[in-house]
Amino acid sequence: MPSSLDAAALLRLLQLASPALPVGAYAYSQGLEWAVEAEWVTDEATLGRWLDDQLTESFGRVDLPILARLHAAAHDHDDDAMRRWARELVARRETRELLADDRDRGRALARLLRDLGVEAAAPWAERDDAPFAALAALAATAWNVPLEPALHAHAFGWLENQVLAGVKLVPLGQVAGQRLVLTLTPRIPAVVATALALSDDEIGGTLPALAIASSLHETQYTRLFRS
Image (spheres, rainbow, N blue to C red):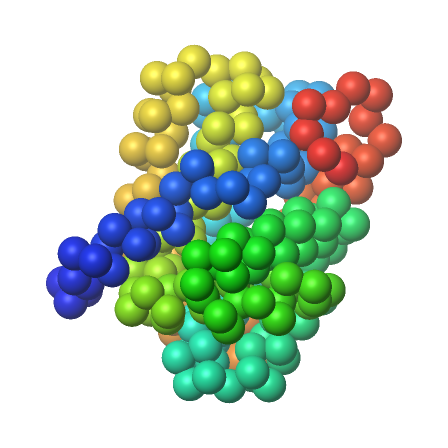
């Protein structure tokens, strides 16, 4: 991660990546609840593989490269490009649950940033094309967070939330959860580097099992997480 990140920007980045950020990230499991029900994920090892596949084959090839473009658009105050890439990310959500997750967190972050004085976030609070990454990009540029640290933090925040969901669902102990974070976070720099190297035409990735799990979660008999 670049050393040019100053102390103030680092602290704002930690705030943005914190699980205490009140945007409702804890409410969705992104298909993991069904994966546990179906016994695709049963222990620490299978949860690790489930998350590693998403990080490298989906999140790192869709969310991160689009966040990079949103960050550039926010830096240039290019609202047309922001809207275009936000719609692109929303369109790539394969199920209603994944779409609702992204939109709900995006609008929640828009309202939070508006209340924290990030004026550019205010119009996004009522938009249907407001994915979380678009508002994360606005926050990062408003708080002088460079691109690469923003991408690392975005990936870490996603991973931590999914590990926390797995700890509840499998269930696993807190030590197992921390061990998974410790094991998977070293993958993030390479995933970020790959995301930054992708051209517009190369953006894309899908995991059929994730889409199936998210779809079936909607009718799962008992649920801890929203669908």
